Length: 226
Image 1: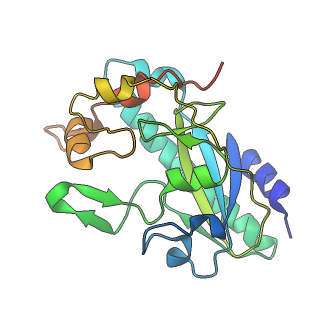
Image 2 (image 1 turned 60 degrees about the vertical axis):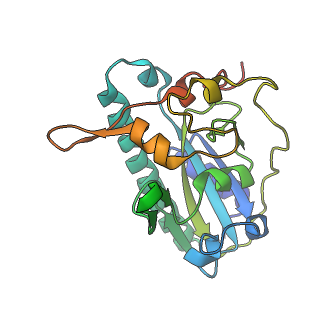
């Protein structure tokens, strides 16, 4: 059976830029219904992996390249998760992939608030892959906030990676808070009812596009630490 170090090597061979592991006890504070064992009752470890968006895509003036890249990366992460599950199964473990974007069940239409079956951002933090910035995005030391997250749940007891116990945001930085056009950020959470109206729009032909990414683009740590 593969150990933690071997699983991370496999994930990177499959295309992950980084991979970390969180033990199930680190999810004790997860909201009811959104714990890894609510998805897969035999889960003992969560394998989390990252892919990086090419950084210049976010600087374009037209929303289509950024939207297209985001959806392509979601697909790449989902395929990586499926391939990793197959390899873990071949090694005698059981594994379940977590969708990287949609579908999810929890939706509150009155406030446009949705929740995935597992918070991948918080899973990445628990797997030692970064911390959440004031913009509520995962910030990885090497790749900044230009990362997208995937995860696989497994019944194997794996050695967990150390969590990062520090705040990476500059102490007085408020760029993301002050520049959000709709005031959706408070440094801890995102008010989805405001963010969704600003961040997404539908073309006349029915295509969904990302319309705003200032909280990601203006962050001094967008590309990680020099």
